[in-house]
Length: 365
Image 1 (tube, rainbow, N blue to C red):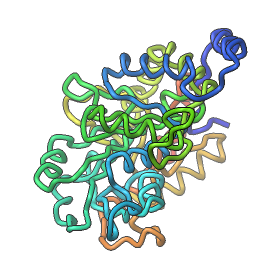
Image 2: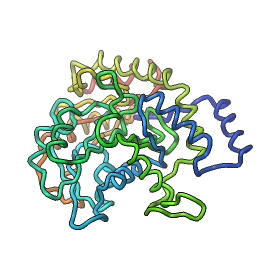
Image 3: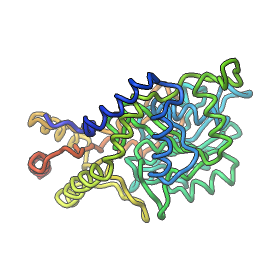
Image 4: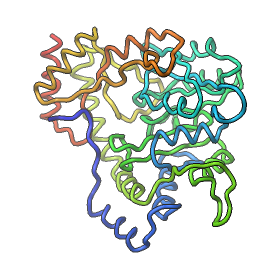
């Protein structure tokens, strides 16, 4: 069976060397040597500052909200954040979990990212932030979103889970907003098995978050803030260091697969429009078909022939009952009903990809 994605496993001997060091030091967590090393290397690789490693991508979002003062558990009255319904459920559920109501604003029909022109109509006195998503690694209109936030005194936290290594106008797209969060889940382009990170615009927000991820403890007998356990451990960092060592090889293989799909299928399906001046990371290959019925039919046909695809993201989150969506998002609902992600990972062989392409062409004729 060809999966829709597969974890990247780096060189085992190199990983073993890192593991040997962990055994020698007998230090598994709490600002270990490898976590510190990975932090510095990621800042250098990504071209960012104020990066904080955490245990997973959902905690990255939650810590970012707290560090920036966006939480329903702080202050008086219910708080809201405007976000996109076309995203993984964690973007919205992390807000709801932290006492912030997600307010869904529709997406651009070409880029599939939140449409900046539609955001302002949802801003109320309860609105504290905008939480856009760089969907499938495609950059949002960061300039327009920045203007909306500045004009309305709102924080911006980008869910950049898919945007590892993405650049806009020659700079890391993670530099935009008050914070940008990353997921290092096993199936991501860069991973630590499980893990995540936050890139803060301001150092003072980073320092506040550092306290939060370790129960608020700042010394052997000192507790300065309310916190939880969100630390990355040494085993996660060891995997991350090894994966990072092989990132260019991984990217090169994925780019080759991505462009082969584009060349062979681009005329038969709708593709996401990648933002101008963007250096993309080839993390996903989503396609939109003519109807939802064709998506269901194609998915079943591929499964019958040993190929798994995923309706990613479906359903559009404004339709999920417990979010209590108040706005209609027809574009997001339309795209979500017709989108499907094809297999893409560096180990996908040319013969396997050709079989996938041939099956899709045959089904769509």
